[in-house]
Image 1 (cartoon, one colour):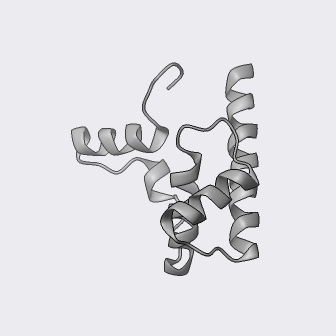
Image 2 (cartoon, helix red, strand yellow):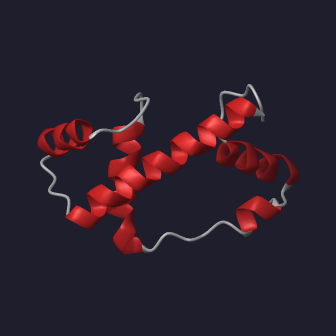
Length: 94
């Protein structure tokens, strides 16, 4: 919801807890394959507290957590961040 500090996912889960019924948005959300979880986890760690993700942010994450990311994982993280920024800009315009 506009102006809310919680994410849409958190809001949908709260609706499910209150009503006992899963909202359509939760029923239709994609399922992340297990092999993609490390990439998603890296993305969520890196993106917290940053306006946009840079290669320096990814390098710092790898050094801090002793991780080695493949090229496709780095590209996926940067692409996810670009899409997040587009969504954020769209919400600001609404």
